Image (tube, rainbow, N blue to C red; front, side, top):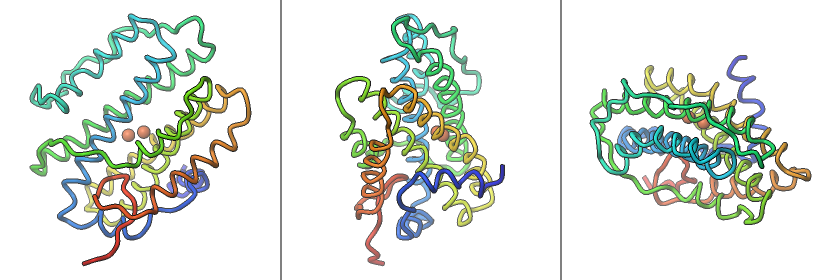
Length: 254
Ligand SMILES: [Fe+2]
Ligand SMILES: [Fe+2]
């Protein structure tokens, strides 16, 4: 599949394109460290979201502990400044995850989310390596309002809560993919190649979330997709003060 084919379902799913003012901001050389750092954070957050879903809905206690242990070195490094940031000899998931017997879609959630976590952690490592090679230090950065703004709208009763969370996941993945594609042509060769290489896995992540949401929901999710689509487009289009990977538009004051 070529890039145009990959992007077609993503651009049909998203209800707006990234504003040019965000792209203009993102390609300013002085914003590159924030772009990479926030992107790196987003990769870890994507892995954490998938892990949370597995722990909340799908796996038994021992498997839940194994998942926590899997992400711990990354979280220690990012949030607690523990370790030197070298994950090369790092051990992967230590056991086969066992699904809870009372959750019908456990096995499917496990297989899709474990693969997703693996890929997100790999992306995290790739961005971090690029940052290191460019002398960009790991630093804590406030999160943009984007993911929080989406998650605020998730209903609180089940199975609506799970299917809404999965729909939010689909939008966040799809937007990331759209932004990688938008940014790639403006970046240097190494970053352009890297962002294009991310498109394929992120495109599948969006589809996986959507497939799971459809299967888990007892009724049609079309209305919820359109609801979150509107919300997502609003968050992407309204002006933002702070530049982040998922921030909104920028008033041009330069
Ligand atoms: Fe990723
Ligand atoms: Fe992803």
